[in-house]
Image 1 (cartoon, rainbow, N blue to C red):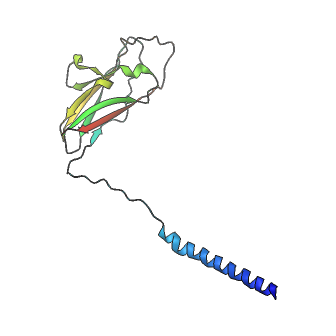
Image 2: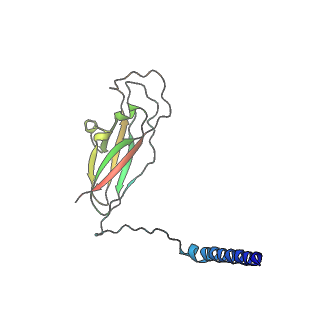
Image 3: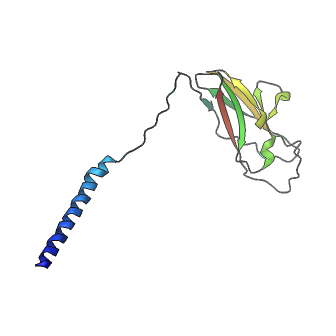
Amino acid sequence: MKSIYFVWGGLFILMIGLVLFVFNIIFVRAGNTFTVEANISASDTYTAIDVDKGAINFGKLKKGEASDYQTITINNTGTSNVFITLELQNYSQNIFNYIYVRKSPGSDSDYVRIGQFNFTLSRNDAQALRLVLNLTNYPSPIYQDINGHRANVLTRAMPLI
């Protein structure tokens, strides 16, 4: 007699477990959550710029030489005037510290090192920039070819209020 109660009790516990398992699949799984996100602005202004080139190649240079200038254009596609800076990132050689930038048109005396260059850009306006890699005053010796080294240039735009 005890074995019958034991079998029925085991079946009852098994049925409860099965019901809870099915309930978990049907009802609990249907209640999974997800995250929603929105950027809410108190005004109609936003900052956005567009750079017309994804890469610049200065070519092959030796110490004491300067590259031909390369031109990029930055467009202010936002709704406010912006302050623009150019910053080197992820560079493996300090040679890239010798990139000089100036507005175009402009004179050659206007070239400034890339990390120190900045300017303002009115909304719906564009500015051409000339960049040159100038190794004429590069202080370190270059003992071997440096092929394929790259650096990223981060173009930051901060709204002018």
